[in-house]
Amino acid sequence: MISSSQGDICEVRCVHPEAVQKARQALPDAGCVEQASAFLKLVGDPTRLRLLSALNTGEMCVCDLSAAVGISESAVSHQLRLLRTGRVVTFRKEGRVAYYRLLDHHVTTLIDNALEHARE
Image (cartoon, rainbow, N blue to C red):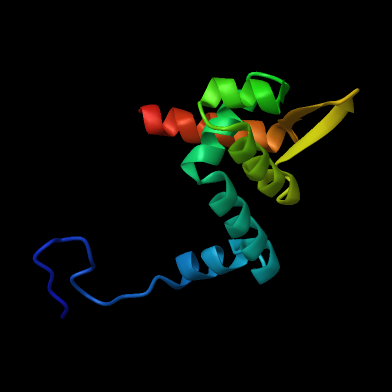
């Protein structure tokens, strides 16, 4: 018998085969786990999350993002480059101005859910 003063672990060792089998069947493949983990690390950075939150309101250029988030345009560009490479944001050019936006609804939903969870 294993004892714990904190009560956060089982006091007896037992395995529930049905639960284990169900969980194993639901596990994504290793490549998917790696990609999802890299994505979560990318959006989990506080500066990038602030930029993504700003972009969640709509398309913005680097200058606007810099003013909204309160960091230099150079820092914004660096972070956007990482987010673009990670397929989190995309951009379009209009003349000499690049307008950035969230890549798709998955990113929007993730940002909304993460922030809603943090507010609860």
